[in-house]
Image 1 (tube, rainbow, N blue to C red):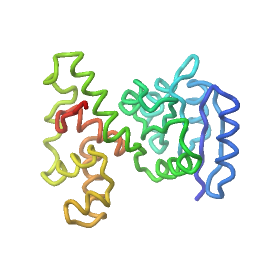
Image 2: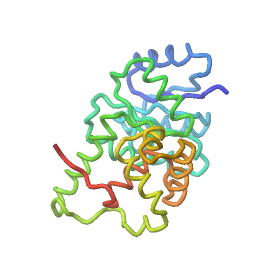
Image 3: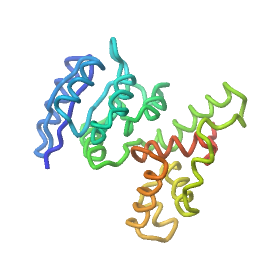
Image 4: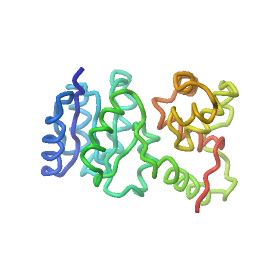
Length: 230
């Protein structure tokens, strides 16, 4: 199956480079290019891509606003957004995940890393770089808490939302938020990767999470996992 990709970036040269790279792969094709968020939304609705590579910062409607619109549209439930950011410590990264993005990637990523990201997102998995999963999200959520009521600020997602999870599903959720892959979780819990995948999928369904990235955010914002800032 060919993975349909939409490119959204205000830099023409960068879009051209991405197009050449993506179209060079036998299992991918670029179905459109957008120079701002409004165009990205319109083209997503008309072309129905599998993956949108979305720049966070664009003139007019930015990538964050566009991602919110795409994620909120039930007709576009099969579209996965990967946010592109110049710096992996971009303050909008967590907001993009809250908005419904499947993950993010730095623009300085190697070509193979970008192509792998597209394939991961198209498969319905979340793309979270090790830096993001194991440190960045926790850091920004910790900063958000300290800006509010301090280290023990009230969670922004009600802990009651987790009551639908079984004990094992909560355990898996904690490990997902720790940045562990299904194979790594399976090894730690001494179960099969398929069993872990089942627990992850059930947790996603119970928590109305679009993907693994949303599970990470929920884990931190509900207080199930406490962020630590080094």
